Image (cartoon, rainbow, N blue to C red; front, side):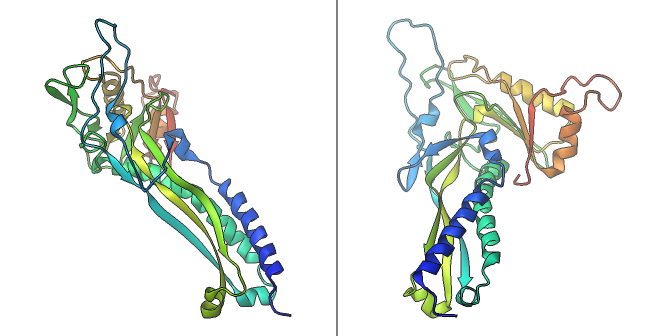
Length: 300
């Protein structure tokens, strides 16, 4: 076969990009069920605004201006990659069919990455800080006596202790979100396909690959309740009631109503028995039947 031409490489690139784009659509974007996107325009984002949980109040006197908290919650974007090396000899021998499948799998992994980041953040919320300086799931979130964020702070819990696999109850249908996906650069497919490239000279491969920049961000802890206790009706009901009682600074109820239960494979059977069975184990009506939506994910 004659020497590899640039036209051949360009055609290969076009084919792999098409398969990459096809792969992006293979995995369901389950992260969108619980998270919202925040666009990032730099190395990091600072989330002072998360200390603002707005609620209408009777207008008496002047407007109430709530101060931003001084401890800025800074989230640095991380960089992720997935590389596909095409052997030069495979191009010479016209044996490149397998690389389409590899490129498609790389595209799929870009979607899986976002699912992984968001749901792993939930699982790690028992030991990772959020905007108020406490762990996202904690027993000591401060809620202040006055609406402007001043006065004595009471402590509020959004977690249950335990030693089992985590499960999380969420409120996802309000403007405030429990989790955000901070995206600096969307998933891109790049290539080094020049016949004069140094990689080709040194390694005898043409390189293609995906790239993404961003990070998962903890949002409003008031929209989440985490537990490592057994997933029983009693523990679920306690978490559900606790979220409905959450108040803003000053004591005004936030109107939180849980709508989604998230768990991993270890809690799947208990979650389905709790939410998907019309009757409980004793044969009585299950009062929690379809009470909230259920997301079972391998990424948690």
